[in-house]
Image (cartoon, rainbow, N blue to C red; front, top):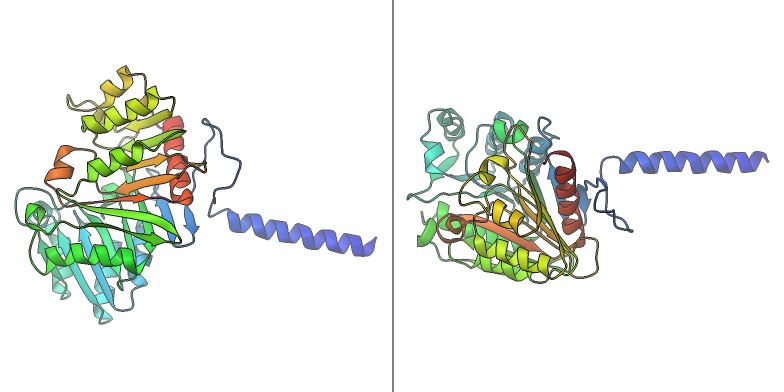
Length: 360
């Protein structure tokens, strides 16, 4: 009996440790959650990581960026729409002072903005070269490449508002092949001073942990067409959170899947949904179960999951890319279409959470 009690204590202790370890990362498991079940998945699965803030809580999304920068042993390449988050500025300066090669590309409208200029000045005073874009279109990227081996991207601009007020997400992918695509895009802007329609247009694919990852760098690489093609594969469910959605061909694709019996649900940013160009009303009028967010800030995510929690090629779509004609034809943007169950399940979990708790 004494041995039995000892074994019981050991097993109980092991279970406590196990669940304590699982508290940080909710890794997807079978069976699939119901449509109405909250299921927010973030953390690490192989070479993939996903993280989400939850306004007004940062959920340490800025700390994830700082840690990513701090992991660099040789190079840090940053393409960011705007920046005023001091801890991220400090992390970049610290790497430069360690003798690492730190390079930054940004949007000229913010580089020249009096409210943001002090933060760019700090970077430059530390010896970091900052290259603003050229032209009227937007340098809308939000990505970092570290050591040519891993990429951080998503919807998060490195600002205070985007940390605490606006809903955002980031993905980290460890892959030299994917990092090479992003480095090519970065060098065109930083080295060649080519932006927008003047770049050599890059798209491609690679395999990460045996999963297909497709990457598109706008403009004019067919990113919207690639999204439509991905949506067309849906045979079970589609979930999304979106800031700006004015592309009627994307809404037509989603409506077509709904009419084919696929569950299509998503949340629009309330402010953007009020635009006369928004696809919110066309989708709602077509019978799609769409809502508008109730955050005080922006629902800034641009994410979609296709056939999450199924064996039918689950897909996650992530990037700086809003679903608009200008994102497709004018701006510097990146879009990832990731054929990976962890990514698809993670995005679905986040979209379900927003839809059930922060939308109406």
